[in-house]
Every structure is written in structure tokens, then in C-alpha cells.
Length: 130
Image (cartoon, rainbow, N blue to C red; front, side, top):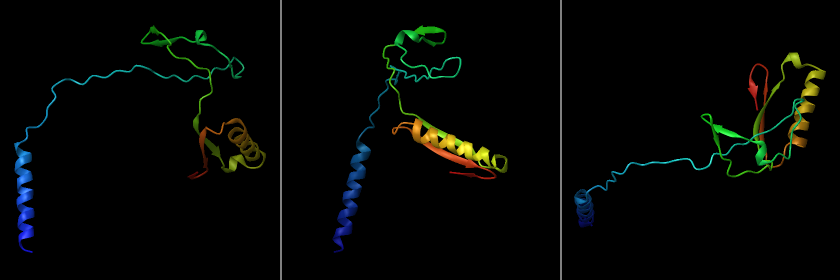
């Protein structure tokens, strides 16, 4: 039984010596990277704040550092959103104000958002509460 720890010691020592003999692999080439596609999500509203839908690629121009960029991919499909809603539950919201605010939040979150959307509600008074 005493010989097993000695064998393990010699194996570990041999692995260490062998590992020390291997030169490290070095790659002196400089790493370069770039961006091929930049995704831009836009919501368009009119002067009265109503949502404008059905716009095509020709309705948009994208500039980078003042230079017009070519739009290579385009879709006008709805994309999922993630948002946070802050709800004031302080004494200033007593009565009808809090009822109206809660009704608006309920309608927005449970009727207007899509099942793919994500949200959280943070109520605040003296301390925030999720």
C-alpha cells in the first residue's frame, strides 16, 4: 500500500516535467473584428401620437456619422418588447386616480401587449415594490 502514493507522486512529477517541456502556442496575428449587420427597431407615430403601420423600406433612411447607409434587410413585422412600468401608489394617488391608473396598467399589460412581450411592474411610495 505504501508504494501507491510513491507511484502517484512519480506520475504527477512526470506530467509536470513533460508539460514544462512543451513550448506555449503563440499566435502573433492581430485580432480584428467588425459589424456586418446593425439591427434597428423603430416605432413610428403621427402628429397626434397614433401608431403608423405598413411603412416600407423606402420610408426609412439610416445615417452613420452623417453618411447614408444602405438598408440591406427590412421587415415591418411587430417585434417583442421588454418594458418596466412604474406605478405611483402614494397618498397623492388616492381614490379615482389610483383606480384609473390601475385600470390603464391592466389594459396596457393584459390587452395591448403580445404574449411574447415581457414586462415588470414596480409600485412605489416610500419604498419600491415589485
